[in-house]
Image 1 (cartoon, rainbow, N blue to C red):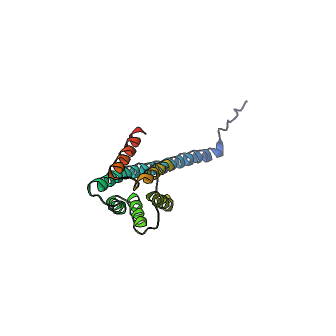
Image 2 (image 1 turned 180 degrees about the vertical axis):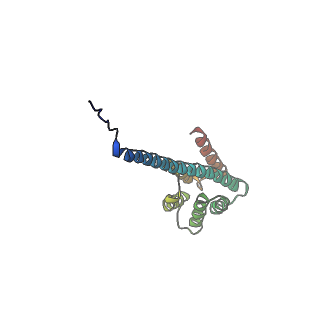
Image 3 (image 1 turned 135 degrees about the vertical axis):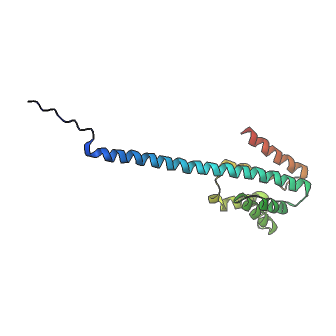
Length: 155
């Protein structure tokens, strides 16, 4: 009598393979959720910056507020961490701890880098804007802010 040979398709190791597959799926899903959450925060912060720029334009054009005062007013109207950045830049300018708006933004972004979900090129755009703020008259600053919004729509 010929006995059929039992074929072993993984045998005892089959449970380990299933657990390994489940572990890979769970870990991949968690990484995806974390990445998605970071992307969601970034989009929220970019929208918050856009709102802050519109409010800053209004503060400069219609109330003729000084830049430190305008930054402070905008900061209190925005959510954290973006509002905190504007308030901190305002404080630095009021206390003459920095020589320019750009220097203030650089210092504050460096301090708050962990709280932000922005990419480096997002920060670079804001720093480029800050180089021009305070260097021109009201009409020039209005045009600078409008140019930034056009850049945003192009990208």
